[in-house]
Length: 210
Image (cartoon, rainbow, N blue to C red; front, top):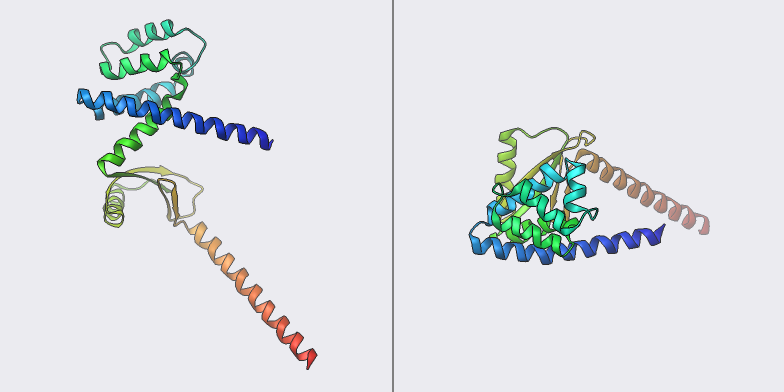
């Protein structure tokens, strides 16, 4: 079982590295065409609204069940005249090198690289209920001040979360949920009880020695 986990970890890391390489190439082409934000928006829409929603299209666009020539034909038919030429050409190059199964990793890496050079940090806020617009705006303003950078905030809802919120800033997690506070209180109580028990044992030991 552990061997499988290790293999999966290596596989994911390899896909991330591939994503980073192709993301740089995509940004370079998009920058040159002056279409960076549009290209990223279109690629994100392709992944989230098409590939992740349609299993049949995902298998054709991202899979290996058909030839490169067939994939190119499909891309032209489906997106020709509807997608920025830069992105359409890039998708064909990715298909030619048979890296179409890494489109999600390419997109994630491209967004991260673009945010870094713009001085933008992406933050995900998870709450038990959906944030109101006022709460959303207030949180963005607070994070802008605290982090000293422009924040792009994504809001997610987890009904199992007990109050408060959890913030993901890059690889760092700030857990301000009530559940986490209760966990910390329980841990502190256990540590206090252990210290008191140790002190009582020491007093008992000293008294018997005397």
